[in-house]
Amino acid sequence: MNSPIYWDEAKAALSKRDKVMKKLIASYAGEIMTLRPDPFYTLARSITGQQISVKAADSVWNRLVTAAEKIKPEIIGNMPAQQLRSCGLSERKVLYMHALSNHFIEHKKTIKAWPNMSDEEIIKELSAIHGIGRWTVEMLLIFHLGRPDVFPMADIGMHKGVFKHYNNGQAMPLTEVRALGEQWRPFRTVATWYLWRALDPVPVAY
Image 1 (cartoon, rainbow, N blue to C red):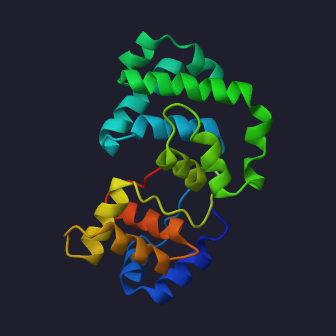
Image 2 (image 1 turned 180 degrees about the vertical axis):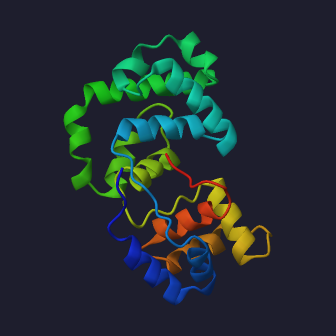
């Protein structure tokens, strides 16, 4: 695994324009987001984490890794629904995993083109897969493709971080959260990562 080349530039830019973000960045000096080399791994991990806590997602994921031995589309796609369910995946997520596996098997050329596609083009392509929504694709953009300016508005952890550090723990309207994110362009990915980092004892990874 490697790390984004823009990280130091992003830290400097965010620290200069945002005192709260400057403090967060200083709190985790020396830490950096790592990128996953395998897009299928990232998307499968993201499906596992949909709408459940980080702790619960880790538990289910660890059981899946043990059962599958390797997280590959050909392996996950051929695992019976009952076996996937025994790992802790819901019935819907089993369908999503199989749909994702089939897409990777059938669209290898398109997947290789992702590095040259825009964020929105990739979101449009993958959102056509059953069970893959914008948030799931955004995790791919962040943790596999390393895109610098992703702001996952549907992410609960990001919102918790904003509420905690920018509004004394109180909820904020979506318009205000979105406006705060605009201040972090073109490095909203990095700002989001630090908000995540401040919530969990270990760095978030997909």
